[in-house]
Length: 132
Image (cartoon, rainbow, N blue to C red; front, side, top):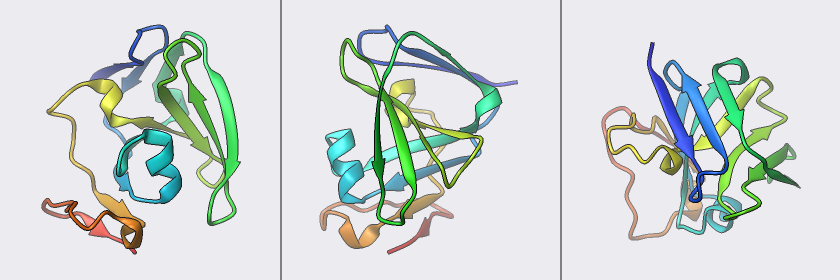
């Protein structure tokens, strides 16, 4: 079974994910742009039971465009977003792909909120579903 390890920038918060992610996606919504500090956010979903979390985290909660509530966990030391949960996806945890620091990480399958995507950015690859 594949085991992937992720961590924040300072290494205080770590995650160990067993198996393959349920889904990898790119989000271009303005909230994800602000949260990630980039022009989009790329995250992988795992079932809660397949993720072991170590270290401390602070939590920030917000309501999204669709009305769902999301709880974002970030490292209190370095401030890096380490995971989040959305109430519309019970039992799943989303982990930013950059925390794995693995260029061989599986490619995204979905690109969402593309109507908010920066014009110079293209999400390309075989089999990627694109949603406005």
